[in-house]
View 1 (cartoon, rainbow, N blue to C red):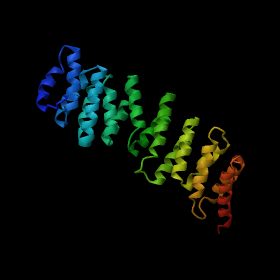
View 2: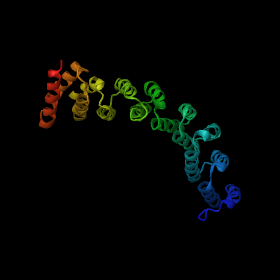
View 3: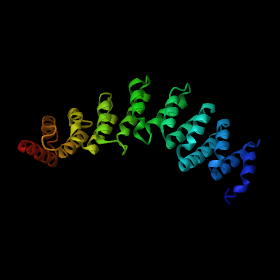
View 4: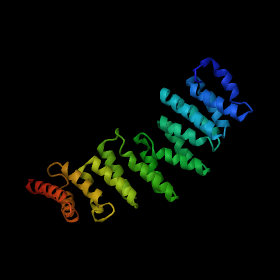
Length: 275
């Protein structure tokens, strides 16, 4: 392995089934480190068979590197292995599918949410909540609405909110995510995510989503920042009533911060001068 001797791969492959656990573990680590696309099938076969955490970790690293290089062409083989694997190996395959992405991978991970094994179920939700593209948004919304377990609802909702950070989504799609999420949010942690996202997006149409939180001490500061950010990006005659109401509230709740009050009053003056 240290000398990167590719000719040793057949020998390492045989040693991955050695009866000595230490030899087997070293062979798996070495084979995984030297593996390329041609070794993908052998790695998946071994992953399906093993329950040893160190071997699973070594193979997962190799799968990540290989699939990262070849793209979604490896997804069908990952999905096939997922159907054969036991509970110990499935999370590694789910994480690899998540890193690879694509519609087929997304469908496979969504299917694993319904797995009877708790660890596999949780791993699938975590992978979905960290999906790298916005196409997971509808799946996460569905889970946030329908999951019976509170922890699953929270993970799915947080993941759904995170979808609005995906750069490929247009502003209106991001705002739609925030609107859907706002109706389900109960905890301060998710409120902070929502308000931070609205401030970053700075779309004036989101003012009405942030305004209700101006009365909540735990998130008031973030709500003020979001309203100021959105009001500052407002075009003339856009969202006039909602923005005025929110800014007037900001002046009240942020009285201890003269700079914020001054900025809110400046924005209110702009509204007053509009025709």
